[in-house]
Image (cartoon, rainbow, N blue to C red; front, side):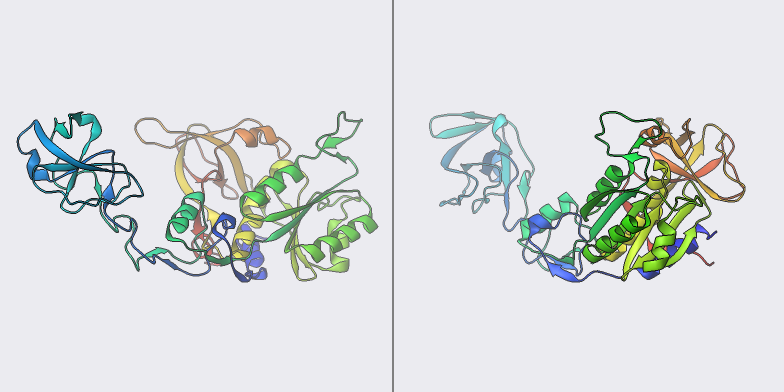
Amino acid sequence: MKRLEAAQTEVLDAVGVLPVVEVRITEAANLALAAPVKAPHDVPPFPNSAMDGYAVIASDLDVLPVELEVLEDVAAGSVATLGVTPGTAIKIMTGAPMPRGADTVVPVEDSETLDGRVRLLSGRPRGANVRAAGGALEAGEEVFPPGVRLTPARVGVLASLGISPAVRRRPVAAVFSTGDEVLSSDAPSLPAGAIRDSNRPMLLNMLSDIGCDVRDLGIVRDDEAALRATLAEAADTADIVVSSGGVSMGEYDLVKHVLSGIGSVGFWKVAMKPGKPFAFGSIAGRPFFGLPGNPVSVFVSFEQFVRPAVLTMMGAKHVFRQRIAGTAVADIRGDADRLTFVRVTIERPSDGATLVRPLTGQGSNMLAAMAHADALAVVPAGLGVGEGGEVELEMFSWPEGRSREEALTWPN
């Protein structure tokens, strides 16, 4: 069995980086920047009002209430034709450019409208409610470095700058499940010995969530010819191939056997629990990930291998989930020979502690417990964590926060 970090290193060494393309900003979500982005202009590009109210000179507010002559109204998208002078004000809407001479905005709710005048009831310091030009970003400032993945908020920033970013091409992932016992998730009933396919819908969603275009190749029966044809189709149409099931030691576990005939097998056992049976190899130069059949093993194997590999192909800087420390509120058992990922929930009382509680139902077939988990407790081989002990947590519900260099210290 390969040590986890050694297996992860081998996987990441084997995957290449996809070509650089320029995409429309509306198509950039989840992709990773291939080059740094610098602001071509200030954001905001001009001083503007942060509120609906009255643009004034702050010194006019020294004695309150004060009545000022209203020169004009300025809506967002318009520019004042007049300048503010002592004793005058301009009614202004949020986002409208500040008029010449004005240095402060008094909110409309602190005013009373008169005939051509306004009575201001409260004061504001100079500069209040005014957004400075370049207050968010200055022209020439680096907005994002290369390797950053484009979240919705980052897409919004690039849109505000008018930038169509250079990114790594979106990966195409082909996914299928194996097994005579596996039926589609929409099967109305289950014959004796059959199960519904939870792995493929889960994998399709996980791959889509990290930015892949996914191809659903369905369920492949335990037949060498059918499996060989599906693998060939997958390698011909996708950048990465992901299957579930068929990688253990049983007579009908055919994936490793077929793969070795039409491609190559790098390794197929990893010293982790769950997820020990795991086949990694290639078909026609495409990375192949043969995940186990049990759904929790599929989830954990995807997190440890497929996700970081796909993000590496996309040129992302951070490819592994963040890890933090927590305190066990109950014993967390490990395995004598394998690193163990234990499904846990997290509680955060008012004192700021991170309290970790293992869930019942740790079997690799028990996906419901996985659905209730907040994190995976990482328990080294041969160890356990007693109540009150510190445990490392892999936060699978948090964004990636570790680079390859930070996560893979093997060999030391």
